[in-house]
Amino acid sequence: QVQLVESGGGVVQAGGSLRLSCAASDRTFSSYAMGWFRQAPGKEREFVAAVGSSGGLLRYADSVKGRFTISRDNAKNTVYLQMNSLKPEDSAVYYCAARAGSWALTAGSLYDYWGQGTQVTVSS
Image (cartoon, rainbow, N blue to C red; front, side, top):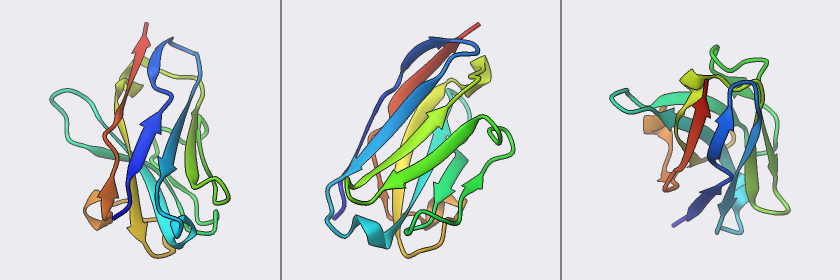
Protein backbone atom coordinates (compact mmCIF):
# COMPACT_ATOMS: atom_id res chain seq x y z
CA GLN A 1 0.00 0.00 0.00
CA VAL A 2 1.48 3.32 -1.09
CA GLN A 3 0.46 6.38 0.88
CA LEU A 4 0.60 9.72 -0.91
CA VAL A 5 0.49 13.09 0.82
CA GLU A 6 0.12 16.29 -1.21
CA SER A 7 1.13 19.73 -0.03
CA GLY A 8 1.71 23.19 -1.43
CA GLY A 9 -1.80 24.24 -2.34
CA GLY A 10 -3.19 27.65 -1.46
CA VAL A 11 -4.66 30.86 -2.75
CA VAL A 12 -2.80 32.81 -5.42
CA GLN A 13 -3.64 35.64 -7.77
CA ALA A 14 -3.97 35.05 -11.49
CA GLY A 15 -0.56 35.04 -13.11
CA GLY A 16 1.10 33.72 -9.98
CA SER A 17 2.84 30.43 -9.26
CA LEU A 18 2.58 27.51 -6.88
CA ARG A 19 4.56 24.31 -6.48
CA LEU A 20 2.74 21.23 -5.34
CA SER A 21 4.57 18.34 -3.75
CA CYS A 22 3.48 14.75 -3.25
CA ALA A 23 5.45 12.57 -0.85
CA ALA A 24 5.17 8.80 -1.12
CA SER A 25 5.63 6.35 1.71
CA ASP A 26 6.87 3.43 -0.37
CA ARG A 27 10.59 2.82 -0.74
CA THR A 28 9.90 1.36 -4.17
CA PHE A 29 8.72 4.80 -5.33
CA SER A 30 11.07 4.64 -8.30
CA SER A 31 9.05 1.74 -9.72
CA TYR A 32 5.86 3.82 -9.95
CA ALA A 33 4.73 6.21 -12.64
CA MET A 34 3.15 9.29 -11.10
CA GLY A 35 0.37 11.57 -12.19
CA TRP A 36 -1.39 14.76 -11.17
CA PHE A 37 -5.12 15.15 -11.62
CA ARG A 38 -7.57 17.85 -10.60
CA GLN A 39 -11.25 18.22 -9.92
CA ALA A 40 -13.19 21.46 -9.79
CA PRO A 41 -16.64 21.69 -8.15
CA GLY A 42 -19.31 20.20 -10.37
CA LYS A 43 -16.77 18.90 -12.88
CA GLU A 44 -15.25 15.56 -13.68
CA ARG A 45 -11.75 14.74 -12.52
CA GLU A 46 -9.27 15.56 -15.26
CA PHE A 47 -5.72 14.64 -16.08
CA VAL A 48 -3.08 17.33 -15.60
CA ALA A 49 0.38 15.79 -15.96
CA ALA A 50 2.25 12.51 -15.60
CA VAL A 51 5.83 11.33 -15.39
CA GLY A 52 7.31 7.91 -15.95
CA SER A 53 9.01 5.97 -13.20
CA SER A 54 12.51 7.04 -14.28
CA GLY A 55 11.61 10.71 -14.71
CA GLY A 56 11.16 10.62 -18.44
CA LEU A 57 8.02 10.11 -20.52
CA LEU A 58 6.44 13.42 -19.50
CA ARG A 59 2.84 14.05 -20.51
CA TYR A 60 0.65 17.12 -20.08
CA ALA A 61 -2.93 18.12 -20.66
CA ASP A 62 -3.22 20.67 -23.46
CA SER A 63 -4.70 23.18 -21.03
CA VAL A 64 -1.49 23.30 -18.94
CA LYS A 65 1.25 22.78 -21.53
CA GLY A 66 3.87 25.48 -21.33
CA ARG A 67 2.68 26.58 -17.88
CA PHE A 68 3.00 23.50 -15.66
CA THR A 69 6.03 21.25 -15.17
CA ILE A 70 5.99 17.84 -13.54
CA SER A 71 9.17 16.41 -12.06
CA ARG A 72 10.21 13.81 -9.55
CA ASP A 73 13.04 13.14 -7.14
CA ASN A 74 13.28 9.40 -6.57
CA ALA A 75 15.83 9.89 -3.79
CA LYS A 76 13.20 11.86 -1.86
CA ASN A 77 10.19 9.75 -2.90
CA THR A 78 8.53 12.95 -4.08
CA VAL A 79 6.84 14.21 -7.22
CA TYR A 80 6.32 17.91 -7.91
CA LEU A 81 4.04 20.04 -10.01
CA GLN A 82 5.35 23.52 -10.72
CA MET A 83 2.44 25.71 -11.81
CA ASN A 84 3.17 29.07 -13.42
CA SER A 85 0.95 31.68 -15.05
CA LEU A 86 -2.00 30.39 -13.10
CA LYS A 87 -5.50 31.16 -14.28
CA PRO A 88 -8.81 31.17 -12.38
CA GLU A 89 -9.83 28.08 -14.34
CA ASP A 90 -6.93 26.19 -12.75
CA SER A 91 -8.76 26.36 -9.42
CA ALA A 92 -9.47 22.83 -8.22
CA VAL A 93 -8.49 20.15 -5.77
CA TYR A 94 -5.27 18.63 -7.07
CA TYR A 95 -4.55 14.96 -6.50
CA CYS A 96 -1.42 12.97 -7.06
CA ALA A 97 -1.65 9.34 -8.04
CA ALA A 98 0.70 6.41 -8.44
CA ARG A 99 0.62 3.39 -10.70
CA ALA A 100 2.94 0.41 -10.72
CA GLY A 101 4.96 0.43 -13.91
CA SER A 102 7.05 2.80 -15.97
CA TRP A 103 4.58 4.42 -18.33
CA ALA A 104 3.10 7.85 -17.74
CA LEU A 105 -0.59 7.40 -18.55
CA THR A 106 -3.42 9.91 -18.66
CA ALA A 107 -6.39 7.79 -17.55
CA GLY A 108 -7.10 8.07 -13.86
CA SER A 109 -8.66 4.61 -13.79
CA LEU A 110 -5.22 3.13 -14.46
CA TYR A 111 -3.71 4.54 -11.26
CA ASP A 112 -3.60 2.40 -8.15
CA TYR A 113 -3.08 4.86 -5.32
CA TRP A 114 -4.32 8.37 -4.65
CA GLY A 115 -3.56 11.15 -2.23
CA GLN A 116 -6.14 13.12 -0.29
CA GLY A 117 -5.81 16.21 -2.47
CA THR A 118 -4.74 19.80 -1.96
CA GLN A 119 -6.84 22.85 -2.80
CA VAL A 120 -5.60 25.39 -5.32
CA THR A 121 -7.57 28.61 -5.67
CA VAL A 122 -6.63 31.23 -8.25
CA SER A 123 -8.28 34.59 -7.82
CA SER A 124 -8.89 36.96 -10.73
